[in-house]
Length: 158
Image (tube, rainbow, N blue to C red):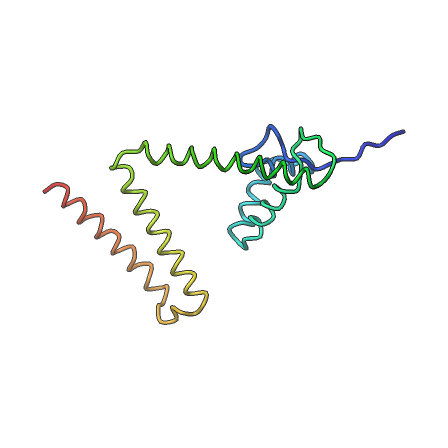
């Protein structure tokens, strides 16, 4: 009796970016959505999920790939990931260039808020914001944000 070895591949059919989560789901017999949620949690909570995803996208062969050496796998994966990144960049460019000025303003405000929040959290991790108490900061941010929306709305009517 010949036993077939189970191999890990990046999924060709069940993929969003590179097929890593789909391949892991196939290999372990799990729901791909659960694997994606787990990977996202690793990305957001300790950053290791992103590193693991990139490494796996580079070294794990695609399901349909038939190559002889690990070097060929990595070379083929790099080419494929470059094409995927280019396509994603083109889609993002189309998304942002096709929007009107009205829909860009909320995105810019949201983007700015995310940058400010990230900067605050980073500085707080280095203990550079020791003098700001978060219990007072977030209500203040909400009040200022609400005032900015009201003033912006009043300026439009004038």
